[in-house]
Length: 136
Image: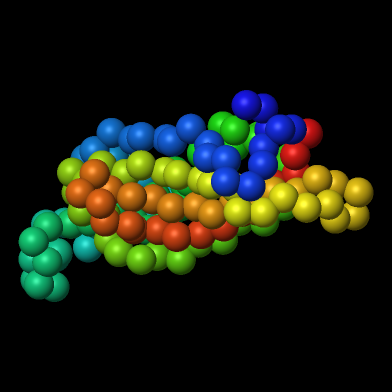
């Protein structure tokens, strides 16, 4: 299947990530500038009533962005939005998925609207979103 032949109901190949490690959280904090201690300091997380630290929501959004750019590149991306549904705990293993919901023509472009999700190995959905991409 190529991008030009995508149709309603088609799914992109899943992006299966390694389990989230403390190192991943520390590196993402440095790269993003988001040093909220709830993501990197177990004592702070426990003082907030949590069992442990958890991943930045924007890390999962970045993984979904990677799924999109791996499949389409950056130029065809017309819109991208998400909402956070649940936390990703340290050691959680995310899988990013995209399914074509709609294909239509607009302003001379063939556009696909994709339903996006990030799901953990235990079945928890952590992110829900959509993207619109121009097809070749």
